[in-house]
Image (tube, rainbow, N blue to C red):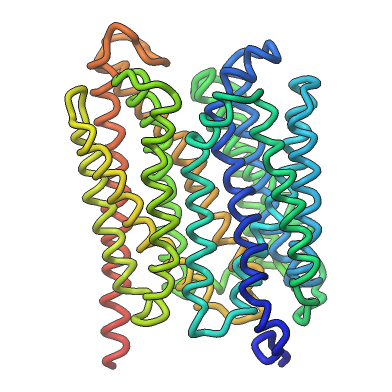
Length: 478
């Protein structure tokens, strides 16, 4: 079988290939979180209520998750690099359209275009790196991609706040255009031609049922937050999700070339690594949702200062992830993953202890631990996922890995806000759906309950990973 690792030109340019893939990974992930801080501005500018403007974020996440498996399978069928290149163009055009201040409906449509392009690049990025880089450098390459994924997911509010302090909201989208064009030029020069393509038929019936599952589930979650989970439309959407999920499994088991080969989940290392990724990304987004309220409303810092403080976490991720990737190549991913998760548990406990009088240094220390812990976890875990499947399933593995991250983001956003406001309502004695200016202790109570739940997610992920680690050691001895 042909391999990029036997091609001297590809190997000479492999780091330029990674530059293209990593930069676009950053942009596509960034756009799932950068919009949050601009929602009040967009709401005022387009004269749209806040409960409706939230769909600027939601529709992007829903479309990305719905399309990931489809484009992973198409990438395996026709070539990962073809799909990746097409996705970069679609995402860049979508970003340009998003910044055109026309109407709310136009913005939502542009976000759909942007999300389609993002899902094409997310479904192929790790697969391209896995094929291009030799085994002794794969951890470093996947670590760099992992660092840009996490940087994009977590740095959104900080970068968005800095941009909005000087520029109109359109620029949170338009900033993607020059970077996108630059990476397209780099990719056109350095990305090789596809050499792996299965030419399998695409399972569109499976895609439709899976897309309906995602739309029903996430639509029910987001609408339920607005109107209540006991109302008719969210209940109908959840019913649609259940029916579509059953139909998806039934259809996939009868397809010659399904979107998901369910036997891939028999690989316990692969499956547990995906589950821990969901839990950790959810825990990260608990912090992403709650900390802006804590820093700006409860502690009184400006948006710019709060944005800079929230950059501690992602900046340490950027520094730490390539180093974690290097050490993954040297000592293997298992022990680094466990150490990273233990640090995340300690950081989660630090966030749980935050109150109105917590020294700023304590907050920075907890955020630094979160950054280092994520660096030590994400890179080795990404390597474990991508190295545990055969080359013909790399597209599906990449799309499932990206799906796990995006699922964690959505669940983190939905769970954090639900838990926060439920705890605040319990403490205040009546229904609360916003920060109460004259009752900061109500928010602190809700925040501590929310971070308690986040800590539990990290603890469960740690226990699962330690169990996997000891099972691996036992199997190796036998």
